[in-house]
Every structure is written in structure tokens, then in C-alpha cells.
Amino acid sequence: MTRSSHDRLAGRAALVTGSSRGLGLLIARELARRGCSVLLCARDEEELAVAGTMLRDQGADVALLACDVTDKHAPQRLVTAAHDAFGRLDVLVNNAGTVQVGPLSAMTEADFRDAMETMYFAPLRLVMAAVPALRERGGGRIVNISSVGGRIAAPHLLPYVGAKFAAAGLSEGLRAELAAEDISVTTVLPGLMRTGSHTAARFSGRPAKEYAWFAAVAGLPVLSMDAERAARAIVRAAEHRRPELVLTPLAKAAVRLHGVAPATTTRLLLTPVARLLPAAGEAPRRNVPGRVAARGVHSAALHRLTRLNDRAARRFNQQLT
Image (cartoon, rainbow, N blue to C red; front, side, top):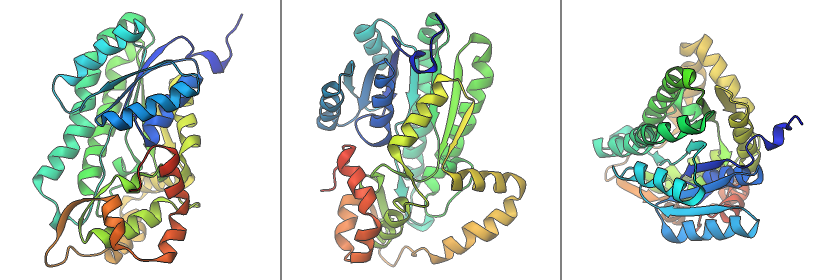
């Protein structure tokens, strides 16, 4: 009997990094719904335990491993944990990330190194550790979550976009390297999604002002995408071994425009935005969590604009307090 497109992942084992909350949690849930056993990985043990309970209550077969993906021992620990729990590893989703928001003058080299370690070197090391297991099973899948910011650099997000550009290049290179071994690599370039990430991002310069613009834009219904719908699209792309997935109509349009006319894109989209964003100020603060930066914003209008994203934060294990 020919299998339907909905059971191609059934019986397989997946590892999803950064899966205690937000998009990673939703990708893990969608994989489980398609019949995968899933190893959840995140740094925070309490968040991870909550995520595990959420998925198990929905009938998912999950295992948990709390670890920092930037630790040099993490890749082998994760691959070993997948084998110990499920006896195999078929799907790797590199989702773990960090978002640092603020002007360049408020950033340090350490911010860039942290972004690169989390979103470039950690996925690279994990792929290197996982490839033998994926090769052994035959037909393995790797999904790398980059960003539309990995194609078009947005202002006040430079550590993030630099790492995401590198991640997108790595992902495309891995696809070329691994094609002959029947290991597919899917590069995902999401635009804005309502995951509640504004609560977990870190803000530098004038944190309250940076939080205000970031939170407002991230949750706008027209500009942003429902995160559950995004997770379904990502898993479908992995299932069908698509080379690339760009999410949200606006992101697709921006990527196409930038590919044809990069100077025009900068002039029309990026330069006006950069001029509107706040300067660092005389005594810039650094790395303030979103949930803390939000306390400095007293705006009923902003509360209305972020309502959908705040709701997503509560639903997807992103804490608001």
C-alpha cells in the first residue's frame, strides 16, 4: 500500500534543539503528531519539564535532555541520548537561537560571539555528530532554522542577522555536501512569527524603547504569522525534503526584491526603519530580558498591539513574568 504524505515520518526519531518553548516546542509537537518520537533539548530544566508534560499529555513519545548546545560535549550527548531513548535518529532540527536587539554602539564583540556559537557553531557541531547516525538509517533529514534576517539584514539586530546569514550559508553548503548520501537539508527562513519571542529576547541601549518597537512589530497580524501554522509548514517541508522554505508572504516578497534589487530594498525598506529606531543613549544598558524591559513601557496602545503575541507566549511556554 502506498503511504500517504501524512505518515512518511511515522516511526522515525527526531531531535529538536531549543524545543522547550516557542517555535521549537511547536515543531516538536508537529513531528510527534506525524508519528515521530522526539528528543527535546533546552538549557532550562524547568521549562523543559513543562514542555515534556505538555507533549506527553497530548500522547507524544518524548524524551528530555537539558543541555547548553554551545557546550562542546553537547552534540555527542544529544546523539547518544536519542539512541538510548529511541534506538535511532532520523531527523535533526537545529532551532536553538538567541535574539539580541539594540544599536551597534550598544553591542560588544561578546554579543557577536554568543550569537555565532549558538546559531552557527552549535548546529555545525551537532550536524557533524549526527551525520553518522543519519547515514546509518538512510534517508535522514536535517532542518536548519535560519531567518529572513539571514538574507536581508535588519537594523538593531546585527549579532542575530550575522549569525543567521552564516547559518543559511552553512545549511545550503550542507545540502550540497550531503546530497549524495541521501540526507536532505532544508533551510528555513521565517519572517515574523507570533511565538512570544519578544519576552525572551535581550535588549541593549534603551531597553524599554527597543522592546516597544520590537514587540509591536513582532506581533502585528498582517506582518507576522501564526506560529502553529509555521510549524506545520516546516515539518511538511522536511517531510518532502524541500531545499528551502521562506515563511510569510512579506518575507517572500522582500527576499525576491532583495535578490533582484538589493540597493532598492535597502533604500525603500531598511534605511527609513533605521532612522526611526532609538539611539543607544548616553548610558546604554545591556542584555535586559524582554520581560524586564517591558516593565519600562507604559502604553495601552502597545499592549493592544502585542496582545496576540502575549497570548502566544503563554500558550507556547514563554513566560511573561
